[in-house]
Amino acid sequence: MPISPDRQGGAGPVAHLRLEGVAAGYGPEPVVRDVDLTAGRGEVVTVVGPNGAGKSTVLKAIVGIVCPSEGDITLGGERIAGLRTDQVIRRGVGYVPQVRDVFEPLTVRENLEMGGYRMRQSRLAGRIEEILALFPALVSMLDRQAGTLSGGERKMLAAGRVLMPEPSLLILDEPTAGLAPQVAQEFLREHVTRLAGTGVAILLVEQRARDALAVSARGYVMASGRVQLTGPAQDLLQRDDIGRIFLGRAADRSGSGSGGR
Image 1 (cartoon, rainbow, N blue to C red):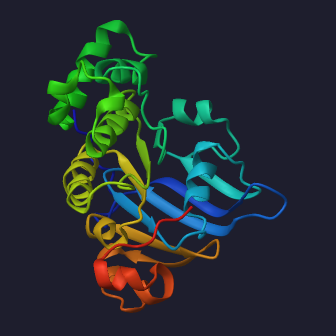
Image 2: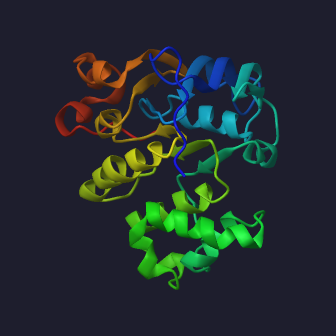
Image 3: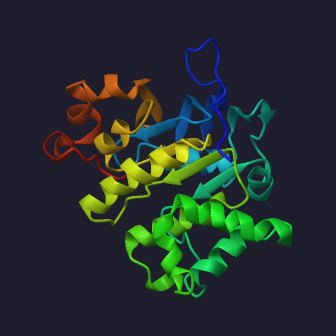
């Protein structure tokens, strides 16, 4: 059943995910510094920026792949900074990485079952049906090996598998990378928007900056390891300096930002 987004005075969703002053990296020097970020349930929040801006490092800090050296991360008011990845996932975080996002030798059905491996058997079949309602194109593919799916089909399966345990936060790391432009736009416009409608908070790092901001409530623009701009997504889309300063000239011409970690 869809979950109604929490509201605060009618102004917008209450922050379900909150990062405050986060610094993180892979060695003695942090890759990202002083990162403040929030995402509410039922809200799409997008992080954009050039290659090397630190976008994916922020995601990895949230899910426990790297440990923050400073700051705090909370989910639903509970501190998750410094927890192992499995502990973070059990607290309601779903993470779809850019690569290795499905089990290729397994069928679509088996991938979904793997996503729900901790569920009671009596609940598993019903949850699979709920995921198929979100991604109806997968219904005819249940017996196909995941490795034979197209790029767009694979992303639907990856998101569906991660959604099986009903996370409260879904993190998508460049989900349209490698997809044809039309397929990428369809994934963002239709699937990401539909998922937010179920009440899950969505944090999106996306190379197609303008397309992602177009389906988002708010956006964060990162460069040089810091958040340089933040605000309502529609306001960011109106800024002429976004493409030139942070996303590269190609963003001004094609509407897509560069990828980046």
